[in-house]
Length: 342
Image (tube, rainbow, N blue to C red; front, side, top):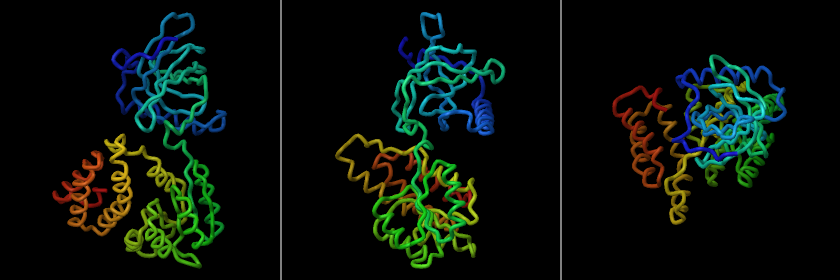
């Protein structure tokens, strides 16, 4: 089969606005969710708007290079939108972009092509060899969650929702054990009940932070008072998850973990490695202080923190953080409502 063509020669086959394409992808996702279980292997969201693909239909001597809108990817295959019908059995080569911005060429064949609307079809390709979907889709990597709660009914429900969201929950009822486990092997998320029998949640998070634990910790409790959220943030929590817990709330929380990583421009410079690691280690408490200042409606402090972050992040190669901090500082100085800033 011919090699994948360059972006310069590849042509888009769909002439729709990005908004309309997103609507179509959302519709297909919804339909697939309603028919869950029909596909053998799990698929994960993989929304890319210009993935270079080479298709060679049966009987053709040459391959056509085009840019497609992908929808989902799995260990065994991928689905994407295409501007015309593609014959079953067509050879296919796809340039998949990883979460870190590199790419891999993956080959396979078309096993399904279904009409969507107009001239648009959804094409499904089965890979020649299995891939690791977690290299390309953030939600494909299972999250490790430490669930610390002495109420078995609440723990069962939270564990069920987490499992449905591709997150493995390890449930324990001892706050002392929670400290030991977190220090021994950091988790993607700790859901920590405030009212625990040995040490309460505030004591646990204080001990973990004093020992240098920088992972995501969420206070898992109902708010007895509006100011409780501020108290938890000041104590060292990153988030608050209200009881009774819902899958939607947990899904949004896991999305913050699974967001595509931000890389330093100097990540390939060994001499900068220790400096970058130290800067990254100091970010979580800074972010918590930003969020606490926002909850307290403390505009001057928020602007001060944003300026400090703006001045330091760029030096370590994090231009994205610098830009975000600069925008936050400018909004504070302009007197924009704090509720809209974070």
